[in-house]
Amino acid sequence: VQDLNLVSQLEYEMQPLHKEMVRLSKLLRSYVADLLNTGISDSYNIGIKITPDAENAVLECDARLISRAVNNLVQNSIKHNPQGCEVCLSLTASQNHLILAVTDNGTGLSAEKLQELEEKPHYMEITDERLDLRHGLGLLIVQQ
Image 1: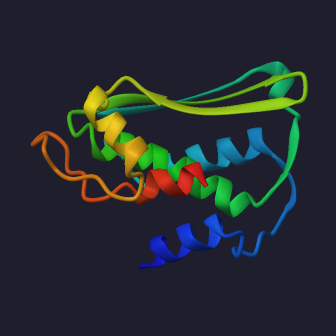
Image 2: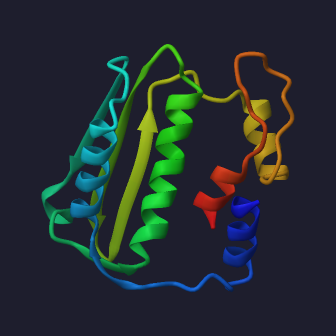
């Protein structure tokens, strides 16, 4: 219910944003440190790559929401790859852009599931026994 509420608030710009100047490299390192300190399984390798030009870059944003988006993506990687995988958080800068990416080398989604997610980003039916996709709210929150 909270996720639905957050999606709605973000979609209609009703979510109160607590913007501040955030050094994203610091936010990512803190997130990874916290994640590793929770006792994540050794079958998951969490890496972080920050280019020198992105190291001191700041962004005016709501740090809590950026952390939530990163966490949703990382948790999806973990949840949908029970055998383990490598997850990489990367931050690069080019001109006036910062690019934050969360990638993994796990099983991924089929082309059909990706299409389904684009058409109905708020819900995905289970047709693949390998994946426990009850909904797509986490990805919708990330998109918002």
